[in-house]
Image (cartoon, rainbow, N blue to C red; front, side):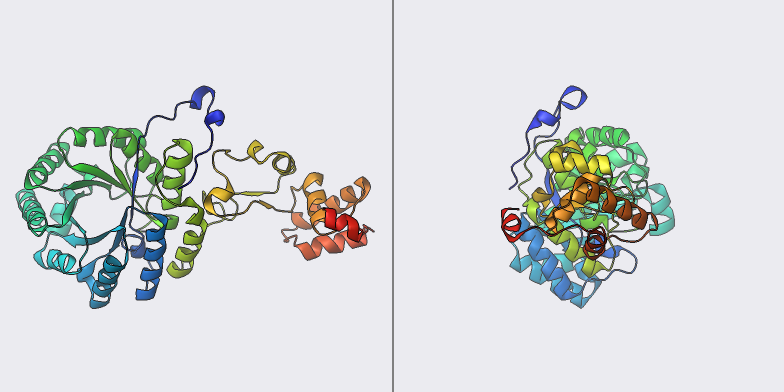
Length: 402
């Protein structure tokens, strides 16, 4: 568990941190994340990622879609038997899907059916009455088998409100343990989604879970809005991977709950960077440098004003309530067009030089010019600039002291 930072950073307009009492994490990297175009996890990939998620304390791991193939079934079964986290398998409201999920040994079966008219008519080629009937039968089959049941009305945010409530009340009466509300096409906004979850909670005594997609860049915000509304859990994916623009990000959701809401998730956040890098490698999806929390630039500084402030006190130009150490990362001072003298001096000293003020200014000019040409200022380049400027090396005694 991570010790949350003090609330001294939340003064004035942001001084309230009591909106969330608790938040569970349902990871769908191995299921929805794998549905990213071009992504395919091998058996070993799934086992490795699931092992880390389990060790970190993730509450639920959706290991896959057992009916999809023999290899998928084996991976889900082995993850279910090897992890202490609750393992979940996905199933349509189809008997063979549910049987495969139950046979795989997962503790939770996540069954779903479309509820929006456009999907009912043009994807399922069914009627509303058939949707309700299949949903109820599937929930009853899962609960009778003794497994935990999660039911999802797919495309909930584009579903007629009255019909959505009808479906929710029907599966609640059938005994579902969880109701997941998915923003399947990413069209929700935080305020609207929060109101929607509040309305759902008024019509069920099942626990509510939320699943947000990132088509408009609002997935994590919507997931948090759902938790604020009273949902118990959010479905997330490492590095946001998933269908189209992806899902709410595991790392963003966890760190927002821990740092912004000052609520302990029970997740070992110090392994977030490690987890992100492994998922990036196995999925074949590069993580953008400006990706929140885990991008290369998340704790990197080049601007002279920012770098000087961070050298003095990292809280000056970082959130303060989230540090690189909290996610198992390191802070970086990057040299380039916007680099200032404070950062150059710091790096020169780290490299064993003892520059004068004039030499620091001279090297800084070279660094800025080099960076302006979109060339990377590496340590070797910096050392060359220092030597050409006549900067002397520190004596052995000074080097030991530094």
